[in-house]
Length: 184
View 1 (cartoon, one colour):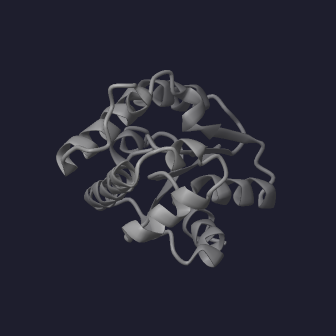
View 2 (view 1 turned 90 degrees about the horizontal axis):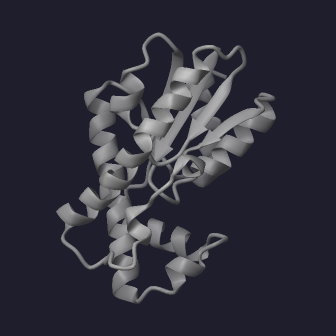
């Protein structure tokens, strides 16, 4: 059994790549970290996107920390699984994946290094009503938070010697992730 894990901030192509890999390699079991979330601190009415960089990153890290327990339980369950599984989402982080050397975990992190690309993607993707309802300053805060998380994730991946890929260009992302995870 192999666990293919794809992490990254919002709007870097994780779900699109997972759909591509699952269809191409006939992998039926996909775990979306968003489905494991029971609480998201960024949806709390008192949350503001108008904070310092440290506070924005801290908010997202707090959100991903809450999902770590559920994701760890899923990874523990997968130890008895026989088929290939894909896990994707915010919360797939180097420190967690490092704790599962007994599983054949192949992981890659998708990183967007340009805030303007994140802004465009967040503004144009399906289901963007919540983002578009924010003021321009708040939208920039959301973008900044996701950018900072991506930079943090890249540094952590390098620290744990785990691979990361630039999310651009979109047209080759699926193939690049496939080559990284499956060698094909």
